[in-house]
Length: 248
Image (tube, rainbow, N blue to C red; front, side):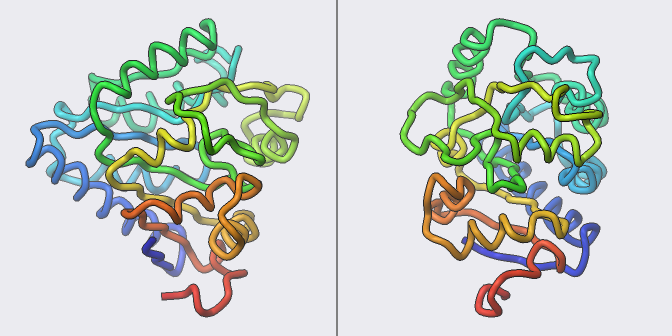
C-alpha cells in the first residue's frame, strides 16, 4: 500500500484524478478498453469533478460498474447512487457502457446480473472510499471477507445510516433504507489497481483504525492492505490521527 497525504481535499482530489486517469489510459492502451469501478458519496465529489475534467481519456472505451445502491430507493431520490453517477460521471463523460444497480428491482436478481457482468473480465481500476465506520462499499463491520460472490445484499448498521444523514442525503435516520446491494470485499480486491480517496476530519478515526489496527472484518477497509497495488489518498484532516510513522 502506498499512502499519499495532501494538504487539502482539492489537492487530494486532483492528485487522485491524475492517478486514476493514468490507470484508465494505460488499460485502454494495453487492452483497448478500461473496466472501472466508481465510488459515490460526498467524499468523492471533488475527485469525480477532477477526473471528468481530465483531458485525453477516451470514455467511449470505458466500462463502468459501481459499488452499491440502497434497496428500494427510486432513482429520483437525491440519495440514489444511480442518480449520483449519472449526474457526476456518466453524463459529463458520455460513458455508454455502464452497469447501474437498480435499487427498485429484486435485490437477488440485481446481484446475479451485475455479478455476471463484472465477472466477465478483470477490473482494471477501482475507485473506493472509506466510511466513517470503516466500511468498504456498503460492507459494514463485521464485513464478510469470505464470500466469493461479486455482489450481495447487506444490512446497513446504524453508524453507516447516520453518516448518510450527516452528509445530507436524508432528513432523518428513519428515512435511510436498512438494506443495500453491495459489491463484496473480495470482488473489490480483484481489481488490478485500487485508488482509495479519503478526505475530511470525520474519516480520521476510520483511517487510523484501518491502517494501524489489525486487518479485521471489524475494520473492513483494513483489507486493502492485502492488495498489492493500492494507493490511499488522504488530506491533512483525514490523516490527523495517524502515527507519524505512517506519514510519507
